[in-house]
Length: 417
Image (cartoon, rainbow, N blue to C red; front, side, top):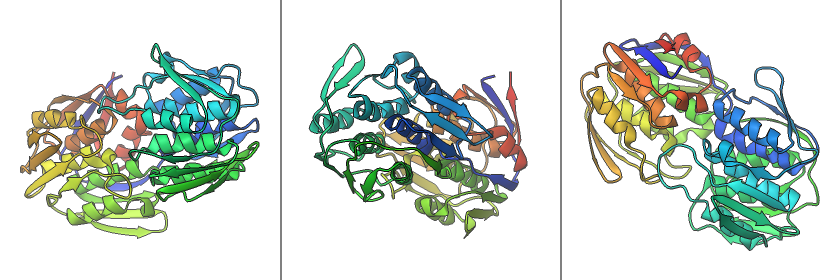
């Protein structure tokens, strides 16, 4: 079941609940490796990546149990084998997040170099540089990272570039290190803050999460905790962008508006009327959107994970937009598929010029990565006729109950066998 059929041209109208954030849940699940006590999580989305991470942790000896729809219990009372094999790591880059926790807890780790979406180079050199600074002996042999230490030591680590997973990995490693670790040029993403909140509930001493300088005072051990994963800001932005492109009125509950300033600003620039009240966001859109320029940047800038969705919106907007991708060098692959639907897009290097057209036309397209898939879904919602999206297993990695939620908003969508 790897295809999605959408019949476009219908405005969206209705209410859906936002799921927990994939990009917060995965590192928080890895945090369970740091303690022998249970970690109880709520608001965990049911996604392919979460299932993959569960398998990866389970094969190390972590007891992983899912309760109700969003509950999860993880207990790493004993870690039998601190190895993350290629077979599990190759499909999901977030698997690299077990590295720091394993080295801190077990003193050794063997982790396959990660895979994931083919959106460009995403080196792990900053992860390894940080662990070496903390006293680990690190080598890369036959596609695997080998790291070992008697005990990590606190250090001042200046990262050459902003990396979310690098910040998360080193923050987890530092919680059990001897002494104080300071991460300079740290990622400021809300998901980093959510991980820090969970680690603090486990007994970690962390200050500065959400800024570019994070201080961690290491402790001898961490305990158990309960934590609810933050709402998914990318899922939230995707549905808002879909409504802005297709028109209509939607309400999203269980959201985190404070994490969406850049996205909401661009949607308002496109002509959407947006109201935020508590954890609820309401968007209304009449007529075609206005073209908006986008330049991706680390948080609090415009998220690279929302670039494809806004490119889809701009294809049917009034005017011409310029989209600059500054994070990943290979993240315009969806542009070729949007052209199959009638979009007018020209690309030069890391810049795409999108000239809005009156309408798109349904066609068969192929998803190339997770967020590209979401962009194609938005395009299919506004295109005349039927659009069939192939290789939608990408969507299952990051969007919970996509067809159900779109149907609740009035879209005509179904999965093909």
